[in-house]
Image (cartoon, rainbow, N blue to C red):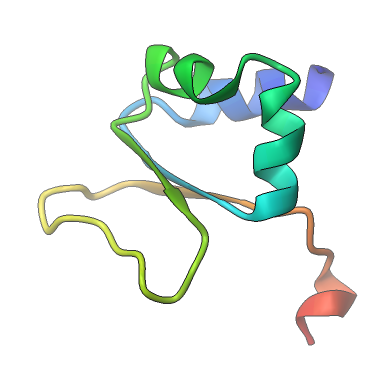
Length: 71
């Protein structure tokens, strides 16, 4: 839960992109409603086909993937 507090502090005015693992973790801490009520302007699946609108200037990416897995 403590790690989600940090996330909630950073999502105000942002489009939030989540991977499946993060979405499942979020489900246990309030889910989509908590992100939107915390100030996110949209929540999307972290996928190459997703994008923001041109006027949405801030994005937050939440993933359970570590640096080594991204290589």
